[in-house]
Length: 314
Image (cartoon, helix red, strand yellow):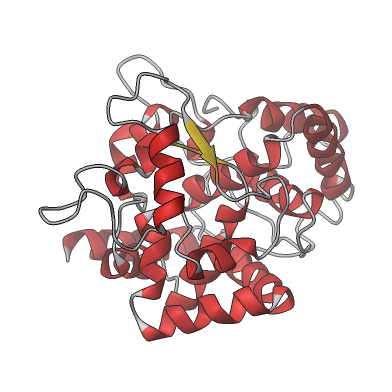
């Protein structure tokens, strides 16, 4: 209860700071901001196809801790271990893309655009560049001054069941519809064994392997992730078309071929199961729901300033 109250207070304090977002927030002060950032993200993606998935995940992880305030971008300093060095975030990468975008934006309009806004725009561009939908990103976020690795325990874990997922999302003002739509982001990227190892070995007292995993899929995953896995970077793509933003994720969930317990959990209650089926059968329905939920999630504000350097507070 206390944590819920704290989050609600954080919510209201964010809005009371005047962080009201607007589609034309930079129309007079930095009109080309969308274009400038899109160019940087496009160039980075041409060199490294893993960039879009990294940026989308970075934005999620930013918004779920203290709102979308760029706190995930801050470096650890002195005795303070920052969010990016918390256990769920050590595999985040492509921070250099945000640095490059900030540099390009600063050259055009110095001191105007927050790092939090740059990350929100870059996440949208990441989806577009991989074949997904586009949307107008509301702007006007401010950058936060606090970043604590200890707070990354607030992120939803890949081992969560449906009630844990519901609680995690509802604490941030997000619905079950948002949960199912945003889970579709798992169409992009790569996962290390550690995120789904729980389903492959010693699952529970009666099953070694999670019985909700398709047997042939489980066998292939066990080949990639043996019980005494020594390969530091062992893992697999989130879905076979991991560089393309599509609705295959939902089809895989229905086939019992999704990676995470939290993915499979979407089938455990009728409301979320029906939405999985809906998005599996209609890419248009998924794209519409995803864009709406992204706008909603990325509008959780926080922050107080516009950083000069995305990695350090002013």
